[in-house]
Image 1 (cartoon, rainbow, N blue to C red):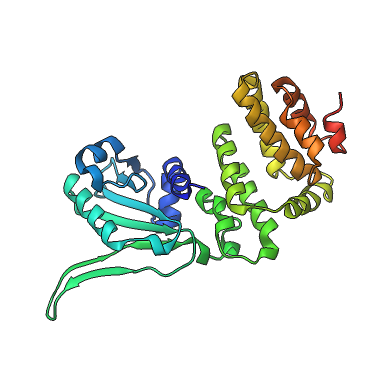
Image 2 (cartoon, rainbow, N blue to C red; image 1 turned 90 degrees about the vertical axis):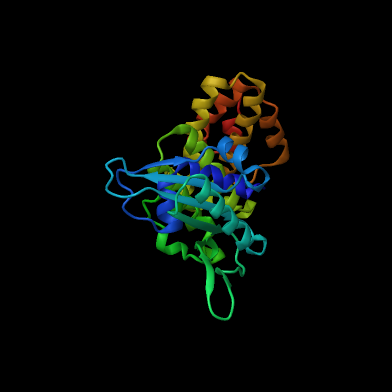
Length: 299
């Protein structure tokens, strides 16, 4: 699982929300946020450049504030973090971009210890003092972000601190946040997968989700199944006849049906995996109205 790349995509897709949530930045209204080009960094910094650090230039076109360079790094495990490497990278970029307005930000996915500051000194003086903004997702209380209007916060609810007994409520809030805050169909589909990856619901939890949020209420509450249905139908209309898209369509339908009906038997799963794109499209339209899995796949 490539957590670094996953978080890089998240920050690049939602740079303002990421800076507001991970770094506590305010007053970004009217600012333009531009990622520093990877090609430029690779060409000039060479092997010193770490591709998965994300430099973001924040500028105010009206000139009311001077521009700032935020350097965002994600570390899955705190034990892998090197403050020396981060300091070196910040100095490199400050020199490259001719600025001293550099703010390093590190997002830690897992709990653990890490150095908070670096000081180069002797008995009398400190010659270099370096620290950074840090966000430890596993230490943030999820309950404080259940209704957040920040999409990066909502998507990361499964990564925050919460009792396992509240896992489904956390999952539901993350998915509904995506539904409410993101209208682009490709991003909705992309970040449903993000939530699923970090929530990592067991088969039993998926069945409970189905019972708690769909069956018992007698209606679909715009949970994961409804989002997938909407997005899968759009993808299926455009690309469902291609072999590669067929595989993606069957995976999405399997996930829909597991959430709608609970764990599926292997024979039914195999039937879905081997169905053609046109058939998958028809079945996908039946998921939220069918009473049983068999009704979805009836001839």
